[in-house]
Image 1: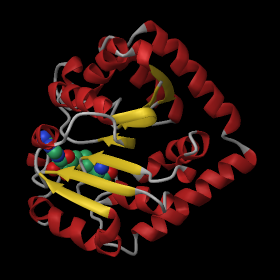
Image 2: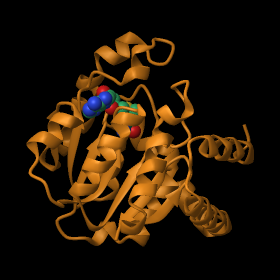
Image 3: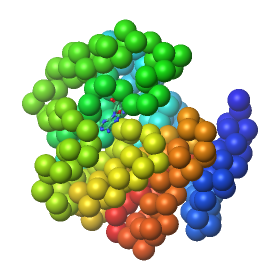
Image 4: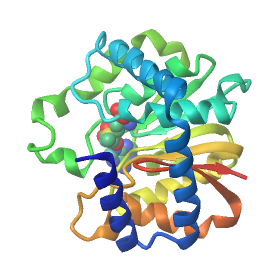
Length: 252
Ligand SMILES: C[S@@+](CC[C@H](N)C(=O)[O-])C[C@H]1O[C@@H](n2cnc3c(N)ncnc32)[C@H](O)[C@@H]1O
């Protein structure tokens, strides 16, 4: 599928998931800006970063890669939001699987401390062996531990549902960067979005994965249904700073 076909399909899907009009407007500007600037030296830099990370990935034990295609967006956000130079950078990830997105965060942000929250039991879609083979699911936590062992002094591993994590975490802003990639049903993504937003510092960045992903039959039951509802609800408290297969906001 070409990039344009994918973008058109995603846009039609978003209309069915009640994307707010202002998000279409701001999102279109972001996409056009990305296409205009993602050329020449910029493009080469992003592709080099992606290739470097993929060779780092290949020196570890990963069975899946649902992350590295997002590196151009993350690289842009890290630069534009000054994440690499923030002191005491605190990051949170809901949904770590075998640790690939965590590995990127820890290598791209050498000052970051990262809290990884996961049940390591997989999400709804991982119970389907056409999607992930059962032997991979059975060893997912062990893979996470092996892959991230060199970073054990910069990681806090929380083995629980995200709901249990919020229940045990004192309320109030404490994180500079939050990645939401846990359970994918609309209700779970909405709960993660609202709780994580409370834990995000003003000026902090939150990134949602799977904006265009369709697993549940009813369009609005997918992550996009929750992400669009969250954007609508928080419109006056956020700036939309990334729009595509992943959506990124800054808390204003
Ligand atoms: C798509 S994977 C994460 C992929 C990872 N971020 C990466 O890029 O490599 C989703 C993860 O969310 C976890 N998960 C599912 N439901 C969860 C819940 N309610 N609370 C915490 N984690 C959950 C699953 O165990 C799975 O490891």
